[in-house]
Image 1: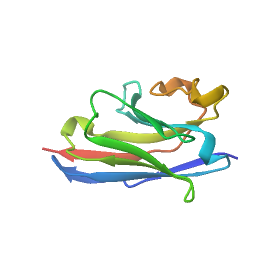
Image 2: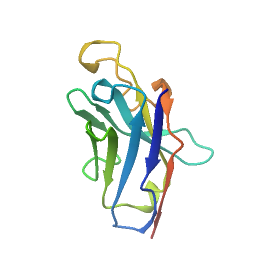
Image 3: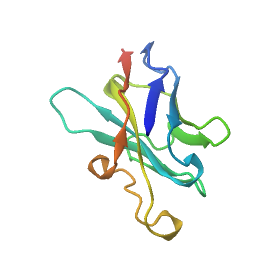
Image 4: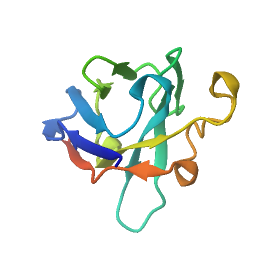
Length: 130
């Protein structure tokens, strides 16, 4: 059974930093499509960053490039999102998501398309105040 459990969300001042973690179980962490998304009530989820864990190919939304870093630790079976220079518009519930790749080299990974992921965690809240 696939399970994703996020942690690390908090309330911070603008300009601050946070590291989100997603503990994964129930699948082969080293060969998976994974991503971080955020959602504000009443809005569609927004893709923030994605990672193909086999070769650590990463993708970022333009809004977070240069500020967020996605990474994975296969030994700890944990996906991370390092966030810096946080702004009030980064406030949201952050989710991690996962999907098994079905094509070579992760070419079919959903990347920043939230709707194409199979599994999603419960989320962790990030609030950035000005």
